[in-house]
Length: 75
Image 1 (cartoon, rainbow, N blue to C red):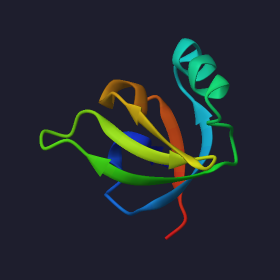
Image 2: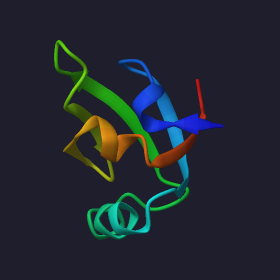
Image 3: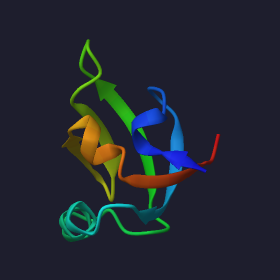
Image 4: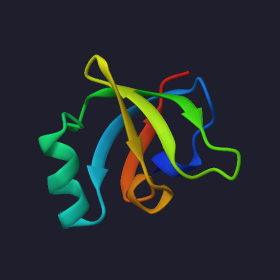
């Protein structure tokens, strides 16, 4: 188990849970539900922000927000 900030471009993962309840609530409202499949589609040259594909759309996250999402690898 690791966090969303650790994944590489093109990697598919499944959301398990959230470490930070405030960020978790915000992400839940945007469709980042536990069990949902996420793919890292792009990242900025310095690694922040990142763009993920989730629930049929692309979402940009700051690195610290992504670090609060626990995921498991699907690749």
